[in-house]
Image (tube, rainbow, N blue to C red):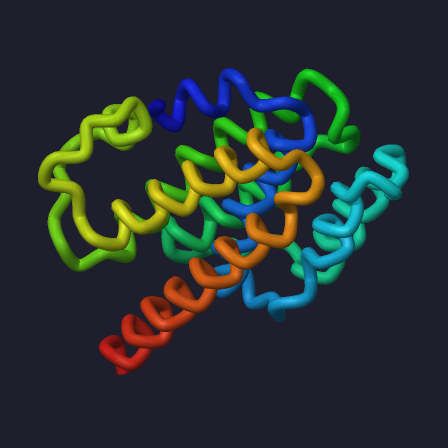
Length: 184
């Protein structure tokens, strides 16, 4: 099943986790530590109050600060993901946000991947993967895995979704570090 189809079929928790996972993997571009989004992950559990989501999003925004006036495109895309996070994870806007985060995260990985990938991001999300660059391919697999795990296991799949996101964050942090060393 394509990523587009998985997003179309996901429930509210799956959508919120999908968008959050994309944002979480891009935290190295925002200058945040690994724990900054942990309260939002905790809000997706069965025992949490979905009404707290908006306050937790606002706290994350405050801690990460505003985007720089000028910056690289990847960092600006990551800031837009956070800025666009819905105040209510139960609202219809969470589907739009999850979809936008998916596109932004794939675009970020494309921008940071030294290998060329000329196909549009939308074609990748629809399942056309031939000639895909390695970093984009790995991000696409992570997005699919998060949605499949949550569709198959509900809230009990959150731990695996977080593990997948953590792995992706480490990879992106290494890529960002390599790029920074290459500029100096």
